Length: 371
Picture (cartoon, rainbow, N blue to C red):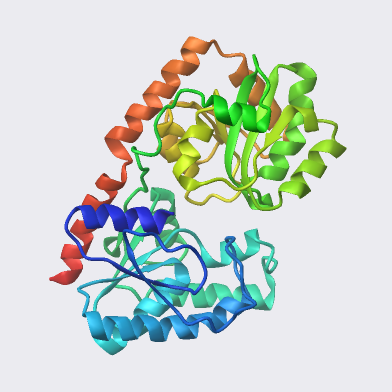
């Protein structure tokens, strides 16, 4: 949803936006979307991560983007992720339109995190060299954390002057503190009079979901009044079975896939929000959690601290023991303290991390490229 929210925020500021993308996914009514032909009807993957089929689809996306650029004549090409960088560079070569690379993580880091390849070895080294070469193609790179900017300078050898950090944001209309939705409570059979730890996002190992489930037996052994709300997909049955095998199925409420427009209401069912994303990548959950007025539990790394600040509880290491200890600490914190942390986090989002502020900062980069 990041690309969609960026586009909406830019449109509000008077910009005309076109999104070229793959043939799968949901078109949003208020942003023009041009899709490639359905040349891979077998491909239905909507989850994050690499895919061999995408290499094939990228050829069609290059052509679709070039065709749209020739017809529409944009001022800027904005490429998301490394495939967007490659496509933007190629289309820029043939059209002369300047492009910016919206980098959200390391290409080789992502494919290792998704267990597509292992770190080290011939394939990894080749892809790392390719990533290093590709990172030097765009005239400007936009990162979403200062640690990512530092990585580009120190590991990939890029000049600081061609990199800018523009933090992500959140939609304050959708994400704000809601009264607890009694219909949702009844729908999912959420128990009463518990301390609720909420997770909303993808159910994947790299998102720390395995780590979270594995920590729950230690949590409920010490405090059976803690209950976990786990909203999202895919792999719901996998994690439900894991919880049952660990004997904690009754301490977790699973929802499955939910509507993005109602995500704020789901988050607001919790007292404390948690994200244990294992790779040190940009973590969009933080913005939505904080906008809903909840204190955060997150792994202790620079990316999380940069966004959350003093309004969170930090897990020192990625082990069930460390996670359970911090969950118990957060759950034992007085309610008035948790409320103040949540209110402070909400103010921090309003002041620094909205999509409107993101769009305003993006405009300044566009102006530099368009000169």
